[in-house]
Amino acid sequence: MQKPGHGQTWPEAPTIERVRHSLRRRNLSVEAVERLTPHMLRITLSGADMADFTSVAPDDHIKIFFPGANGGEVRRDYTPRKFNPETGTLVLDFVDHQAGPAATWAQNAKVGDRLEIGGPKGSRIIAGEVAHWLLVGDETALPAIGRWVESLPAQADVTTLVAVPGVEDQQEFATAAAHDAYWVHRPTELADQAQAIVAALGHVPIEVGTFVWVGAEAHVASAVRHYLLEVRCVPVQWVRASGYWIMGRPGATVPDMEVMEALG
Ligand SMILES: Cc1cc2nc3c(=O)[nH]c(=O)nc-3n(C[C@H](O)[C@H](O)[C@H](O)COP(=O)(O)OP(=O)(O)OC[C@H]3O[C@@H](n4cnc5c(N)ncnc54)[C@H](O)[C@@H]3O)c2cc1C
Image (cartoon, rainbow, N blue to C red; front, side, top):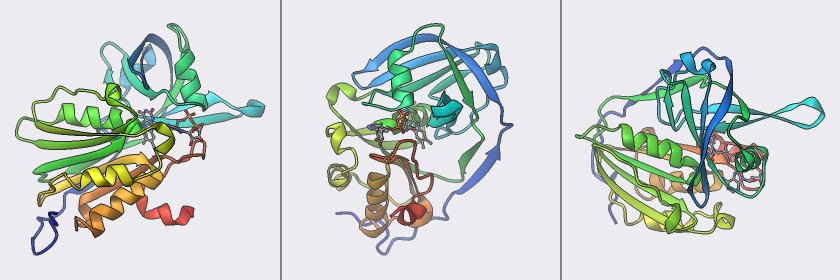
């Protein structure tokens, strides 16, 4: 197996620039609902509130607000898959999983329904020389990974490795870049088990100068990050891993894997 860190010098890591956006709530209406794949619903929203919407990084997220118990509110994070401020449209892809206010809302969404969103609050832009990209995730990261792959220029090369329930949940992305796509199939109930995705990563070459991005269920994101650092010797500055959700813990995320240990 290739161990890029062994005896090889990595170039200086790219810097991550934080850009802040003015934060405001937007009230949008459902314009279209489409079943993209068996486990993914694509919902197009529109409204005059979209006029000044900004999202500059593929792994940006918005907050969606849902009514909670006792007049409260619950919030969930979603990726702006596509947006067009001129036509005032925003496309969100929702994983169709068993329970939870966001998944339930998407399953029942009809044209004309309203949705309140906030953000993105900010974007993290990866700036500097990146020769190769490796994007790893589960179905919740497909919107970010798809947007990322589609945005890369012809001189870029990108490898994606995504875990989904089955072959019919795979997606194709149009891109100018050279793109190698690897898929892992596992049932949703095993979405917090990292063995299959780590085993598949063993077959993925990681060249010096590869920026690796990981977005998945938090235990998987943590295990993948650990494998990249310890087994493949990717320097820590070249890896960014986030826990997009936590099995059995509604609304929980781990924006930065370094704090995973604190969760217990
Ligand atoms: C930065 C960021 C961007 C994200 N972008 C997207 C996106 O574009 N599309 C998307 O679908 N998700 C995305 N997610 C993940 C999404 O926010 C979570 O899956 C969220 O928990 C879903 O909320 P819910 O109300 O449906 O379920 P919750 O109320 O949060 O959870 C209810 C139960 O379902 C489980 N659960 C949550 N998500 C899943 C899942 N995907 N599969 C199986 N079980 C699950 C929970 O563990 C819990 O037991 C993103 C997360 C982050 C942090």
